[in-house]
Image (tube, rainbow, N blue to C red; front, side, top):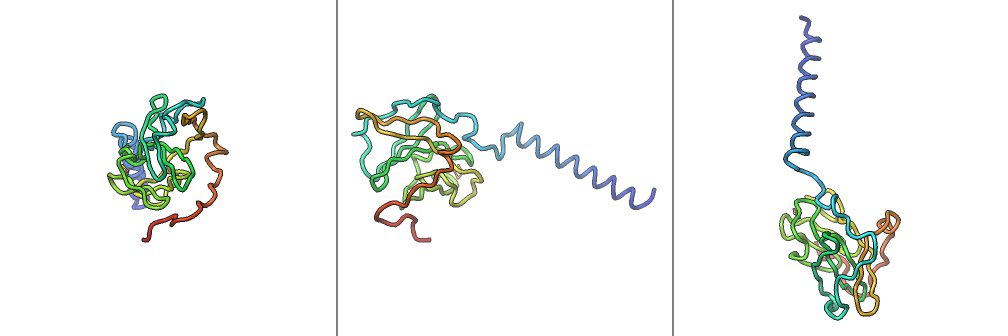
Length: 165
Ligand code: FES
């Protein structure tokens, strides 16, 4: 057999095994799957907390239609993102908020708590943002539309937005 044929056969073997391994890791072991992909939250506004239970610079983990939700008041703004870290699923409400950056308690991924944007890995996906409002003394959330997910958040007034590196 010619060396070119042998090389092509070896390449195809490596390619096939890599595909098998990647598929097995993703579909059987769930490695690398975005942990927020399967419970986006309620499509309709859903009350999750009394307004008085969330003070300024406080965070609160709750649930809305089986989706874990992280509520944060930050410099007067009210924000809601998915509470299960997209990396391996730890609850962000057990993490730490510095400026506008929220750090996951497990492997330290960081997200902009106002919009869920990934700031630093190992996570590779941002946290889904939920639309949040206060009505009649209650905080309500619903799954944000794609356009709402992409809407930039205005900079907060006062304080450092990001902690010193
Ligand atoms: S689970 Fe959050 S960084 Fe790994």
